[in-house]
Length: 290
Image (cartoon, rainbow, N blue to C red):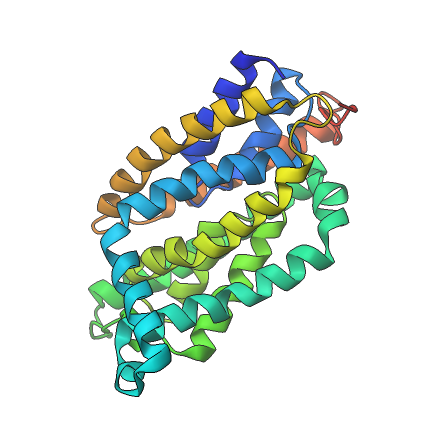
């Protein structure tokens, strides 16, 4: 991998990690359209450490408060009813599904799941799911002629059941094209949470899973055509761009809907299916060995 490739892929990772459009799919597609080799699951996982570092800094006050309360609750029974302490446990519980499924399906994630036809399908299907969830949220927020405005749930109402559902939604993102934020936000909206609450918990829930995945994949970094230098460079690029995207996205969702992302996902998925079906692009483009 050249330094230019690592710069472009780091930029793509930072731009797409927190938007509901799938960063792993865009890394895969960028390589395919550019005629580069697939950067692979290890490169994706490690560069995600950069974007998660951006999450740690952006939500540092929330994270410090949650971690502090959680540790205190281990020895202080009166702290166990504290919302922040409960959030710590809920993030742990919600991380279990992706941890178990990630290890179980590791070979599929690094192989068959990276087929461009599957990526195109998940882009479209999850785009439709996000569109439906967003529509339901909008209906609750504005009401209608025969409907009263319905108050949506905040994170203070998050319990173990919903935390596990969020976790299983996040685990779906093991398939490129699903999108970690897209799946968890869709799940949150369908369960009745506000856009801001669903997005905030999505980012917090991703921290243990992404950091663990990146550390787990460190042993595979530097193998094949992807060397350590470009990987680290791409990770720093992803961090800087990712932080800017988080700040923009959290402001965007307070007043806007997710429909622009829904439309983008569906158009991109259809275009990809057409290109593969017409033989312009191989479903395994960019998978040549490295």
